[in-house]
Image 1 (tube, rainbow, N blue to C red):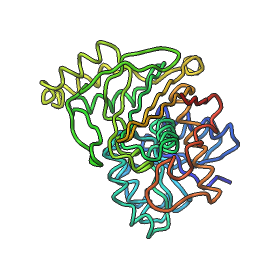
Image 2: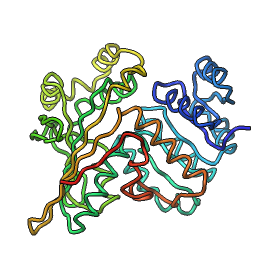
Image 3: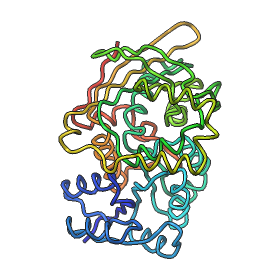
Image 4: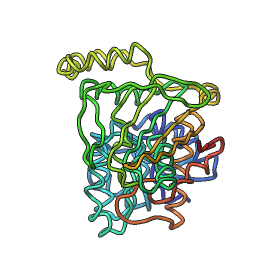
Length: 348
């Protein structure tokens, strides 16, 4: 008998990894996607039930969701794919989670808070690397300095990224950056700021990016001013700055097709993931000059995503959920990420 969990997009790099981890835990999710050959192959490999449908096949989508209690949506780009799945979960009164890091998805879901509460379900996009570790770090810093009015986060991922992640990043090239200022998400130029970040183990130059925490950390902490930084290669930094002037070109169909064609398939191997790791840093300040700073060390990003997403799925299926739109740290607290083996946090 299958567990009441539907993993959609199980044939993508991250979806397949999550499926494998789920089976290793003894879970038996129903897996789904639109690529019949790929989905059936994974289902046969793990002895799972599967469903094949595209997100615009409403009857098949509803039928699949009615079989389960929750969805773990893994098919990006989520700015395109999340809305039909969220609407289906609302219609059928089933919990929704996904592994996005896109600001637009978080804010669209937040606007559906009342509908989710009325349906008695939880909407929680971002249950993976985007944004569990950083969201928990933000909440921890807020707990350390309740008067905080400014939050700065940074992360340094030491590892290769998947085809799907690169495809989403490429699609967003030329759209600029974003921060939260006085409680509102505010557009800024790409690579708006750079600053040196002391991750403890290393010091690196960080560049501001429109990471999901610009949206989620506000809901988790109430802090009105938020900036997020990452470490990027010099070539990527140059491209980000160039996009300020040529963003219109980068967004055109032919240029996007060219860029997407250059993305290698797949993602990091098990060995690469084992060797990889993630360093995070965060700081909060208030209007009186008070300050708190913390660091975090964690496994490689896709490993965090698979474990974090399944940890949250198990909580939901056991009845531990809060209806409405939620973020990981808002629903489960700052220590949620510490449930993942290999995560450590240090206060400075």
